[in-house]
Amino acid sequence: MRVAVAPSRREGDRRGETSRWSVLALLCFSLLLIAVDATVLHIAVPALTAALEPSSVELLWIIDAYSLVVAPLLLTFGTLGDRHGRKRLVLAGYLVFGVASAAAAFAPTPLALISARVLLGVGGAMIMPATLSIIRQVFTDRRERALALGVWSAVAAAGAAVGPVIGGLLVEHFWWGAVFLINVPILLVLLPAAARLLPECRPRDPKPWDAPSALLSVLGILALAFGLKEAGSGHPAGIAAFVCGAGLLVWFVRRQRRLPFPLLDLELFRRRAFSVGVAAVLLTVFALVGLELMLAQYLQLVLGDSPLGAAVRMLPLMVAAISGGLAGARLLRWFGLRATMSGGLTLTTLSLIPPLTWGTEGHPLVLALCFVGIGFGIQVTLLAASDTIMSSAPEERAGGAAAIEETAYELGAGLGVAILGTVTTLVYAPSLAQISGVSPALMDEARQSLAAAAHVAREVGGDTGTALLDAARVAFVSGLHTTILVSLLLLAGTAAAVALLVPRDRRDDAD
Image 1: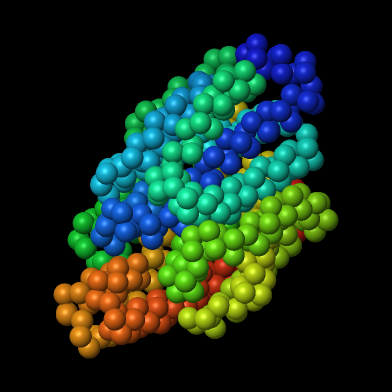
Image 2 (image 1 turned 90 degrees about the horizontal axis):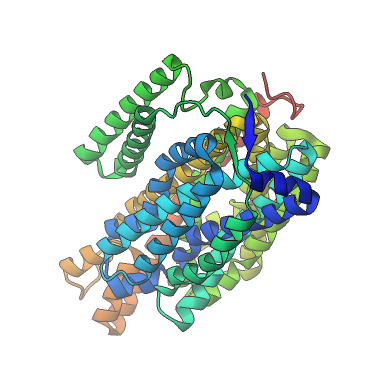
């Protein structure tokens, strides 16, 4: 496929190596913004719950609406960028993300906040695939690209891990909406910088972009995600959505096989390492993102940390994740794909064993060591998967490959929050027995979530309120233990699958 490079790209080539790393820096700032936004809300959940008083269902939608909207749109925007230009898509994404951030900051109701989070997802989906595909475009040497992806991965980890720290600082000194409003001035700086620095690369004769395929993928993934999210309730609407989503995705795949220029190149999945990489991203993120949210609530509502204190306790995870991202490229060269990915998953799995014994009293040193193992292991795993996925795709399909990876990530994040959150609730609610002196109606409210129980305990007050809160904390820890066990088993299974299915040589990705 012949590619026409716009003047900005030719100018970038003349600037040489400095230009490539400047572009990487800008892309990393863009990714940092998106990654922070994905987790900054976790620490703000108790403050947000007190201000807007969402139901337990509304709270889950506030948290994971972003991921569940991003996931079905990534493939659409990733392939659109491949055909019509990635730079213009990034610039448009900045505008959408900025407007949505302002709307979220001043949302007066849970429904308004959910709507703003949906719009944030649209903006994020426009930006995210382009960051990876532009890296694939400007770093043509595989060794350089592995290093660039290591930096990109470290920034993603830093953003996701520093999000709670930023959230803690902002909630401590301002109001919960500040966790969104902070995006606006940053975007005002990024927008002109991206317009000047980012290269543009468009096909000389772009292939047709199949709108029906895009619609099928969006509706199919959205319906499937909604169905899985509602699986715990057994509601007929959730079952119907799951069946409908699965049918739409089957239709989508069959359509791709018939089209001369498909939206998604299914041939990529014939490469074993590519397929395993995508599966590893999906399952790993599923296991850990939902768990991270539960741990943030554990630190604040069980151990009694302030938002800032909880964020500081999670700093070891951030530092270890950054280290894992930076060390990952070297580990890949030394040990190969199979050993690096399975080793990262094994380290993460082992780091989840001590939390199975945690109660209502904290153990700071053990907690910090576990966070180090989780952060380093998971980031090494994700970097190895990302390098494999992007190296398997030709340049003209880089946006599509990036979109597949990001779709796996966001779908895993959204489903992890929804399903693991449901698992925690299913154990927590029946574990919270009736407390003498508390009405059945208030007990039903307390069983919605630990945050709701804390609110009811404040209303009741006295020894009865204290007894209710203590019982709720014990019940939440039981739910947390179950969630950790599910995550541990899933990660162990993924590590075993990688060890069995991935070739020893990381370059043997065409099997």
